Image (cartoon, rainbow, N blue to C red):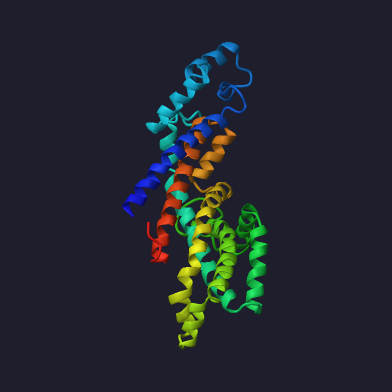
Length: 304
């Protein structure tokens, strides 16, 4: 396992190098970035001064090398809006985003696991058809629309929960539901299909023939094999979840990294955008590594 982890960490290095190239290139697709830092009515002297100050007058390769050297130091430049280093601004928002994301994951699994199992064990029943139909409809609903509907229901009409902002656990309920339900619909269908495949295997038939109870058979034998494929897709969905957090954080004024990046796009804050994209990609790579390692816990036959 130690050799595998070391190899995976070393494999991240070329990925991170490629990521810096992509970030550097995308931010210059519109041409000279100087015009993102000056007013529309700025004089040519002011434009030239800003270009020299940020080093945009240097050759493109030299600009990238300077940028890459800054990335190694964790220096993405100074925020145009806050007049502070960009990376600390992003890092201080990461705990809020992780809190929202982990809460959404908890909501998704609490809904998807029992629903998917019951749907598979009661195939073609009214429960199965209802859960499948709701999953399809729920997947088609945009996050921001569900968030607005939850606000109208739980906050405006019933007055149970706050509309937005942070505070106690109640502020986290609606954003977590909004972000987690979309993932729950996907996991429900995956758990159902995986469980249907597993319970038709010969070893399940043998265990049932020996008189093992249905729920003991499911939780002791079928569930772990069922979750291997589900966890694989779950790891791929993490990127979608972090992307959805951007909109959800904006709708509910949640002070996370996604909301900061969206505001940086509005204000053309290049340094914050670059730092936010880099941190988001790094989080996704770490989570996918954790998912790969979790295979050994689900299936003892898998060894690295």
